[in-house]
Length: 441
Image (cartoon, rainbow, N blue to C red):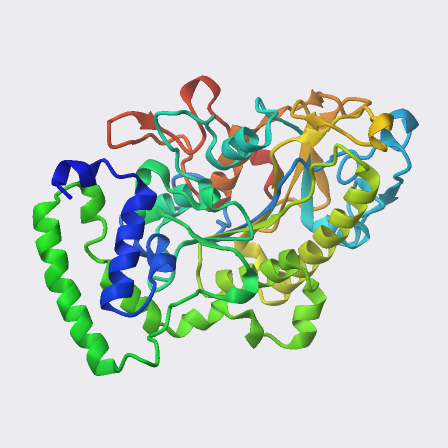
């Protein structure tokens, strides 16, 4: 392979080359370590630059994949049977109502702010998720960094031996650092109970042999980097040191949820989402900056009410236990817990689809809790049918800028891609996001 051909390889191909080399020379698979654990060049964020008086240190992003119905969760319209259907609204510990499908959330509503005036310009799932995670619409010429990568780029790692950004049970693309490169790549985990795979020295390889293999790999790496001088190749210079540090880290056990008491695991629910929320709590407890946990199944074109009831039950248990657990451990004040989705569902109930609801990007709801958020409140208001925002509209870019604000990050600060193009965490200049500062205490 010549220099020119290697430089043209995409990020996944280059990562696979490093994975294969690690497997051959070290006897381990370091794919989980290729990324967030390498980030060192943080811009930095302080109270003096931006953000509320009590800055968040971590974000747990609960991604409702498929387009969560706002009418049947966080923005019920009990006086409008035509759009509400059979779902009733229930009172909460805050100054708002939620759907009957969220009884545990209702008890904790005084810790959360519901944003009821969200809208998106993307009405398809893949494009909507891309915008939600990156503040930009997809382009064929570039891959934008995911919001977790932006957070690590701005804030740096808090725990220098662990990845700064982890996703659980969601599309691996949501962990992509895009043009930021391998240094800020997230670590995608398919299942919360699998831990960080292949992160220990295999029993078949002795400590002495492992050390010898590291030495050989170091020699090969130096020759490789002398031949291939691209920036992407340089970003792997510290790969093996980082991998070994991670393998020896005492905090690596945070990835093993089996160490939790069975009673605690049961509280979160036995499903992957609930266990993912438990893993997220364990990870922020040891200093991981950004953790995303996915919950799919919200694409309710057919049989909306049965499907939403089932999905909401999973969300309700996982979210409520997570918030209470963070609070009990003194972590809620410094952890922003977010519920996001790519769009909502139509107020129109499609009777011929067994009472389904279709995609509706014009209006939907999200939630923020912890980290100085004014609990028990709502921001923005939808119209009578929850069809469009009525007051205080919030774009996806505003939403992501608010996450940045909670962390003390200047989300409008320009960073440049390798080609010199300007980008911001809060999106492009023509639709740049502004944080919702009023929802913070």
